[in-house]
Structure formats: C-alpha cells, structure tokens
Image (cartoon, rainbow, N blue to C red; front, side, top):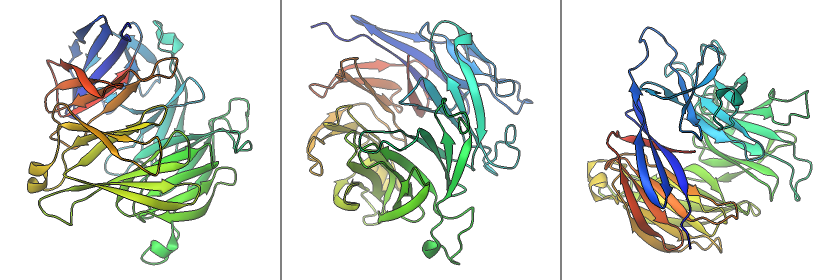
Length: 418
C-alpha cells in the first residue's frame, strides 16, 4: 500500500524572530529552508502578520495597516505568527490578536477599547488575490480562544456563531458567522459577562473580572457551549441561542478543555505542582456534558501535557509532554514522550502506549494530525523544540517512522498545514 503524501511547514521562533522550513513527503522526505529577510524597521510599531503557507510554498503575509495580503519568497524574521482558528463550516480562518502586553488593547484597530480578531478567506492557491481580509472585529482584551456553533440534528435552532473568549476582560464576544444573515454577519451581537459574583471578593459583577476564560468548545450533541473559567475553577455552560449562562460545573486544576468528536465528553488538562515538590502530577479530568458532572480524573506522575488532541474518529487521545514546574520537578519530568490513550469507550480512558520522541525541555510542543479524505489518520506529527526536530508517527502502529532535523530552530515551534 502506497504511503500517504503530505506537506507541512515548521515555524520556529524565540518569540521575537523566527524562521520557516517546508517538509514534503512523496515516496521520500525533502526539507526546504525558506530564506530569511532581516527584521523590519524597528521604528515601525506594526510587524507583518504571518498567515500561513500557500500550496506553491509561498509565505502568506498581511500588512496590518493596509490589510493587504501578499505572497513572498522570503520570511520576514520578525513576522507575527497569529493564532489561527479555521472555521469548520467554511473556508474562513479567524486570527487572534491579543493586543499589547501592557494594556491588552489593539491600538491600531481598536484604540483603547479592546483587542481584535481578523476574519480571512484564505484560499491557499498560487495567487495572493485569492486571500481576502473580510473584516477586523474589535472584541474584549485577550488572550483569545475561538469556537464555532452551528445547527445540528440535536440542536437545529442554534445559529452559526463564533464565540471569542477574552481572558483579561472575563467575557465572551458573540459574533455572527452566517453570511446569509446580513444583520449579524461578522458583527458582535452580544457580549457575555462571565463574572460570578459568588467568586469575586466584593460580590461584584463587573468587567473586567477574575473569571479568566481559557478553553471553549461547542457540542453539537447537547447544543451548548462550554467555557472553562480558570479563575473560578469551573465550566460555565452557555445557551448559544439566548447567550446566557445556564449552569456551571466545578472543575479544579484544569487549564484547557477539549471536546470529544462525539460531543458527550470533555477532557480538561492540568497539572498539580504543589503536592510533591520533586514530581509534577499531570491530570486529565473527564467531564460528561450530558450529565454535567466530572466522572473521572486520570493522574499521570511526571507528565506535563503541553498539547493534546483527539484523532478525528475519537478513538485515541494524543498527549504531547513537555517541561513544567520547579527545577526538581523538571528534572524528573518525562519530556521526550507522547502518550496515547484509548478514548473509544469514554469515560474509560486507559493508556495504550508511550511513544519515545525528541525532547521538549520547555513548556510548549505542537502536535498535528494528517487526515485523509476518507477520514483515515495515517500520521501524527510532533515537534521536538529542544532537539530542533519533528517526529512522524504512524497512527496505526503508534511508532515513530521518521525524524526530520532542522538547521535553524528555537525553543518555540509550531506546525502549519500546506
């Protein structure tokens, strides 16, 4: 059986400057380092925005002032890699802008009134004019996550909406995402205040508040939105039609949420750094969205989950480990493995295997899954930022079949599809 062909871009950065490599596989694997342009004029406050890679291996860049998108043969060293959330119901991609570090405001687009998200029709063809910035939308102050609601068999009245979590404000911005609904299309139709007065020091319900939302998901099964408010250690369950908080689930220790493809179970990931000064203890909390309860917690000694993702069919959960905690905890941590869990019969979630990959002796690591048109998952790609490499895992056998080593690399790495 012929192996699947694939192409990825590997972005590496020290969070100030970066570079891009292109890896392609068709019978054999080839590596191409994209030439680098020096950093932009330091007198200019706005850096070019890196949107991705076109199919003809061009860098897709946007001028943040003019909103012009163009293709380039060289990568500007200081280009800003905006976090991208592809819309699962269209060709649109939503890019997050967290604003400046001091105030959280996007002063270019929103002045002092918050930060922004940018909606792009990103057709990765060979022509730059195929990509178009549809709108830059001012929301609350970031950091931001995005999730998308849509009508389904179980929830036919739920509208097409995009929910943006605003970490510094403690709100969700609700944006119309149906081009046929001209009244709400790409407009902020509601702002949901996540403040829980019972968990605030002075019982206030103000904005900003201490909810600190980070992790949102929408379930087509229940027709509800699930927002993890880290500051309150609870999941807020939101009606996406009325845009109100209906109920909550207490969830201690988790910092992210991940929804199983079937829509019933959510997995929260966190880490206990206090119980044992020499060993970090990773935690995976299993939440039943139908019953609104935490039904299990998997504790994993010496494991910090930097990234986790389900296979498209939902039968496996891939957990990419990295470093966290104090010096002793990091010394004992498993920083060179990927764990694979059987999630075909949740809430049971047994460990299937630990795959030895390269090192991530830092707090971040990326994992990406290649899905074929028939829904199969031939490969899982994992970045090894400490080693400056990428591991290619055969999803059928959970074995590393290839390791790609890069010439130029830094501690932060991210993968882009081509």
